[in-house]
Every structure is written in structure tokens, then in C-alpha cells.
Image (cartoon, rainbow, N blue to C red):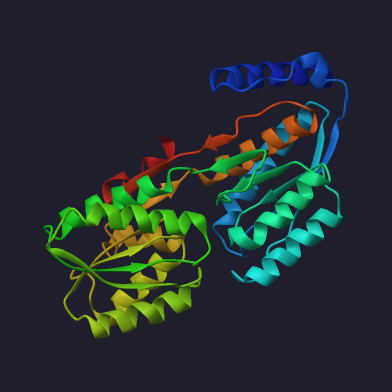
Amino acid sequence: MDTRRFLYRLSAVLVIVAMAIGLAPVLPNQAMAQDKDTFHFVFVPKLVHPWYDDVKRGADASIAEFAKKGITVTYDWDAPPSADVVLHTQRIEAAIAKKPDALFVSCLDAAADKPLIEEARNQGIPVLSFDTPCPDTAVEAFIGRYDYEDDGAEVAEMLAKAINYKGEVAILAGSPGAANHKQRVAGFKKAMAQYPDITIVAEEFDNDDVERAVNLTASILQAHPNLAGIYGCNASNPIGAGRALVEAGKVGQVVLIGMDDLPDMVSFVRDGTALAMSVQNVSEIGYWGIIHAVALAQGHTVPVIHDTGSLLVTKDMLDTYKAK
């Protein structure tokens, strides 16, 4: 299939999706006016973190498919070394200066990121948020798990049942400005509020840092020796919490549920250190992000929200969940 036929096929799919969700689609002949087949994008994630490796794998897979159709896509990946708002905004500013065909931003702090996103869009650069949405900020599309509050509530229900609906619970709350972390914690708290015999005794920010999560968990365990459960709302803190439970000899005494399926977390679920992990379809974020960015650069309309979903995984599902 040549480039033009492929783009017509892509535009047809996007037209159908757009019509289904009530958007006004751009017709294929309008979208083809630019007839562009080379694109360069910039991704600015929240920080350097192995969680994003699957995002890149998905993006690379999508790029390989476009290459077979004669469409060239490249991207820069510019991540700050830590979840630092100043370093993050500096990278967004640098990305805008490159004038890419599209800019991907994982929002670390909505107040800081919003004016930069608006600046990019004012310069005609399409902006897609990924992983973490940017609340109250207009973007062309969001790709990632969208209902984070529901994820937090689902974890709360499982944790509450596991501790027989009574006892002390702690929350490792991630980064204070990250919307996805805040929404997960909000959903968790709302669900736990149904159970009067469960008390949330600690809520600490770990800033997506495993070692910080280890130290915070150790302090929480010391302050609350009867702790019954821990919720880790990002990919880093349940790993830190699991290590702290092992070091304190508390495995089997404190129920741990966390986010995502980095190798350490998978091992903790397998050996019983953690009860479960809420897993996102991470590679789909990168895969569909590239597709939507190419479509936008060609003048198409794309869905404003592409929810890539999540799944709560327990030990009995470890060998099969990736096939779901």
C-alpha cells in the first residue's frame, strides 16, 4: 500500500472514531492537502524512570509500521533526572524552541505546565498529554489511563477486603503536583471512607523516588506498628514499600497494593510481598500517541481522550494478564 492510500485509510478510521464521539472530523481530501510524510516529535515525561521504557517501545513499534508505508517519524525524548518542576518546565521550553510537528507532555505540575502548553499551541504546535493529564489545560489529545480515580477506588476495595474492613492504612502519594497521583489517592480515600473501622494514619509524598519510598515506609511502620495496609499510587513507591516490608520482617502482616508492573513489583506479587498491582497498558500510550500525532500533523481531528485502560493483577494472573 503506498503512502497516500495508507493515509486515506488512517483518515477513514479517525473520521469514524471522531463521529462516534461527537467530534467534527476533517475530511480526507482536506487532511491530504499538506501531503506530508516526514515528522519529528518531542516527548517530555515527568522524569527519567523505567516505567517510560514501555511507552518508548510502543512509540517505536508504531514508527516501524509507519516506515513500511513510506512515512518517516522521529522523536526526541527529553526527561528531567527527577520529578522537579523547574527542570520539567525547562525541558518543555526547550522542546517548543525546536518547533516539532507535535509535542508530548506528561504533566508534572499543572500550574507550571499550562502557560507553556498554551504557548506551544499559540505557535501552532499540536500538544498531546500522555501518562498524566494536564487539568484545566486545553490540549489536542490525552493518551493514557484516564479514570485514575476509579483505579484508586478499585485498589481500596481490594485492600479493605484483605484487612477485613478494619485497621490502619498508609498511602504513599507520589508527586504532589501530578494529577494522576492525586486522582488515584482521591479515589482511594473516597472508597475507604465507606468503612468506619479503617483509618488512614499516614499520607506521604515520595516524588516517584524508590529510596525515598523505602525510608518513608520504614518511618511509617515504626510510628504505626499495627499498620494493616499500604497503598502505593505510582510505579516507584510500592517497590520502595515492598523493600521496607521485607527489611522490617512485615511481609504477610501488612497488605501492600501498588501501581504498574515493573519487574520488582511483579516479583513482589509473585512472592506474596504485595497482594496485587494495578497495571496500565503502557506500550499502547506510545503506540497510539504516535498515530494521533501524525494524524494531527496531517490536519485530521482525533479523539480528545484515548483511555488505554488498566487491570488489577493478582498472583494467579501473572502468567496470563498480558494476553488480556
